Image 1 (tube, helix red, strand yellow):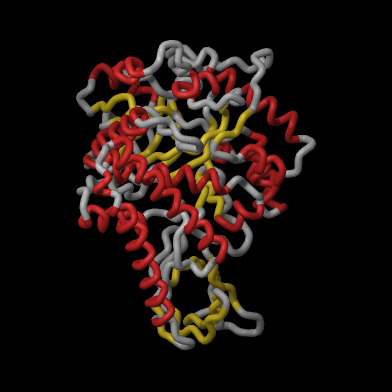
Image 2 (cartoon, rainbow, N blue to C red; image 1 turned 90 degrees about the vertical axis):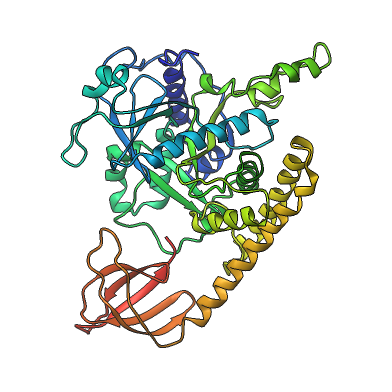
Length: 471
């Protein structure tokens, strides 16, 4: 495969051009509904030849496009490469990212394709500070920043997930950003690196504000419902991915992420290879088109995909109750991508039931038909049962620990300022709390896992009203 993108970038730009022309007649809601699915399809036209990839074949500087949990991610302009470099001098997690990522990729590559499955970016190689062949050629192309100086480091090279096209980015801004900030958000350079994180296990209350950002945009369950997105595609994709992680790759899935990103059509056409043993088992003249292209008969070009990324915190699990316990803990400690039980939200509860059924179905298929070990089919059911039981217990404990009047110490929230004690909460009703702090400063903090906004009450110098919402 040609990784210099002579056609890949062109096709990605072609997609953007077509979406721009189509978006002019669409509302933000209609555009997002049409384009945000696990398998969005646009028939691309190569006659859109303007804006050739200027960076291909040049020595353009690398640009930071994101900060992951363990490091910074830099694009290699003109290629499909990105480099993840650790923030600290301890590269153990980056190496774990490499080894677990390779195992996950091989699992998905070896398993039969299933409808709506996620994509896994390819993982190419790992370099150390002493890998002269890489650093001699590329060190000077990394930015040199005071907080992240230019020097040889450990580096993981992976396939880039392209950002979502401009039409989708602008639709998100028009839909969710306050009117007075929309133009500046559309012009913000960092917002061009837009990936959407679908969070089916969480509801968002309130509107966007000063912290609106498209680089890692969270789309919550109520927003998915409001846009009428094909939510079944999302929970089926997530449940299948989790089943593969648990029972084929045999890792817990700690801190994995699901993101919508753009995928150049040329690069996506061949996503799987036919194993020679598989070919020998086929009848003569059997079509392998659907299996190798991840296509259906009406499939034209895939442009938007749901990806699973970030495997640096994944740990091995055993195929027994102890392994299930580790998988449950990872599920509960990971961001709210998948639906969850015991949230108190009817919509999410409904999604959880369907998610659980799909997870068991895909798990049974892997354990029975692929691994030929039906005796382990009790484990996926144990995972669902224990997850539901632990979340129900947590909800009960939370209710018991939230009296009408209580003394609460607020933990520090990054980037907000030093937390001050909340003297007492005098009312908790319908997700809203009213209380006082020692002074009347406006601040944003976290109480019991909820993001809280405090604003001074009218007519008081030391009273603060505190409102809770999920973020």
